[in-house]
View 1: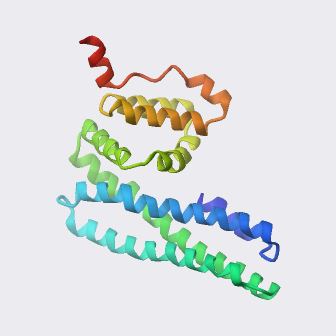
View 2 (view 1 turned 120 degrees about the horizontal axis):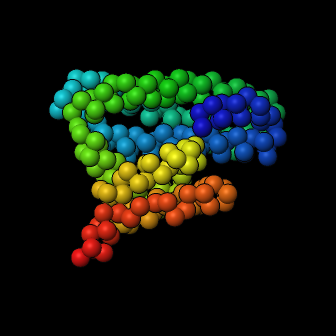
Length: 215
């Protein structure tokens, strides 16, 4: 999303309203995704490792505060577009948006790198696989159906069919039937029909359903 949005900004003529609106919408989706990530996933994950590395987590959280300000500053900049009147102002806006978004992109890439290295290592060192799945289930519990379709759906679209099956079936043993149904429903909504037809029927039933059937 970062790179797609950055490329769209570069290719957009902000003196043309239709092009500008399309680019702005992609940028808004990107900043919204990052803020959602901070508010939902990071709160749970950082809380789970803070006892093992409080100083590291404190440093990351301070950096995240700065990253959040960058995202919100872009949203504020975007609000100015509707008040622009001249072509020169619109061209200047495009250059400002590009500079701000590229700064935001660099910050998010650093954020992702810290999660892939520092945070993941702390999680793997201190939690078993079932415990990690439980953390993932907890994050899913906090998602509304709308958020699941919008945010989780973007992730699902980037996964291969086998990765989708491994992910959803992997948490089926620990999640409620409601969560699994929500994930499967989201998968059906976001995948092209040909891909959905290839994996439908290959999802395992949640453990609670299996246990009830056995009883």
